[in-house]
Length: 188
Image 1 (tube, rainbow, N blue to C red):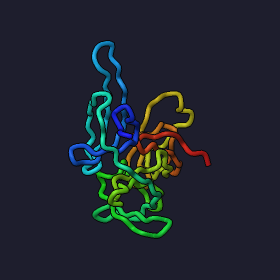
Image 2: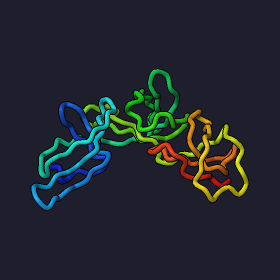
Image 3: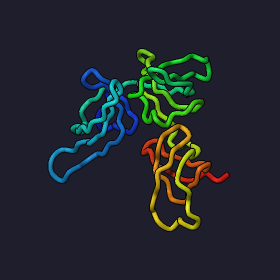
Image 4: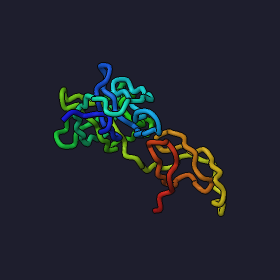
């Protein structure tokens, strides 16, 4: 069965212009006048570039079969190095293939997408929410929870994020790796 733009969904991978693309967002549009179309935001898995693209409805697309595997992050040298926990095979992935490389920490488990045609990694996704310790921030003020004011804080991986005023050094916070923003404080 041929795949068309009507089958577009988040995460779908397809070949276009000799590159492999992954759908990040999509919207099917049926205007009052004229033909329907699909508005998408797609990521080039070869170089990491994200573009907006509009497809006419019903146009055939060349879907690429992918497979997901769980890998553990080991260390960073020129690239990021991961290990398959089943067979201990190690792979090296460049930073443009990782959705948020600055939030990687040793031992973190990630999902790596592989092209089933050539068994090559295409992208690496971190968990959406990851917990980090605060290593530095200005002291919090007791009872200062009513406002939406934020202050800078440094995570244990060296990344700076904005946190609410009541967060202190030593607190553990959950960060959304897709947006790079503070999500919540973790209760001990």
